[in-house]
Amino acid sequence: MNAYEDIINTPYKHITRHKNMSLHDRAAQFAPFAALTGFDGMIYESERYTDSRPVLCEDDAAAIDKALASLSQKLDSRPEVSIVYFREDTRKSGGSFEKKTAPLRLIDTVERQLIFVDKTVIDINDIISIVPAEV
Image 1: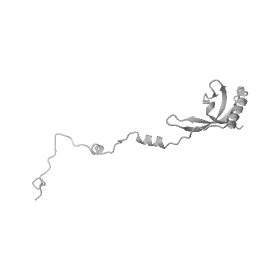
Image 2: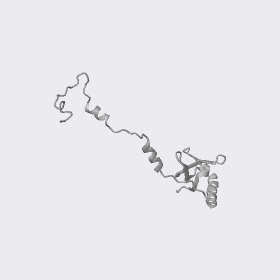
Image 3: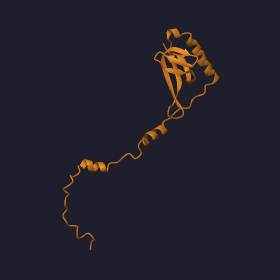
Image 4: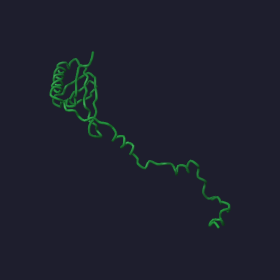
């Protein structure tokens, strides 16, 4: 004998005081949720590759100083230069190498910065290489 045999064939009484829930609302109760909000971003950030800051040898540093001295004499004509520099990452240690080709407006020797016509500022200490742009 089954424990539920006495009620198994009893007709179902629908509740009349509550409206039936729509299928959309019922499905939303069982939909998955993001228990670890932001976790995907953290995984991406930890996987993101950054380069370490290079240390220039004396010859490379001297070549940069020579190029800057040459450019400082031509600033009136707004010479166009190509610079490869190291940009520090704001979120983790290391950074990336960037290239900028643009007309140079000013070499600030006090703050040790290059200021371009488009108002971009690059620290001289971050420069890896500098050459006059191809004409």
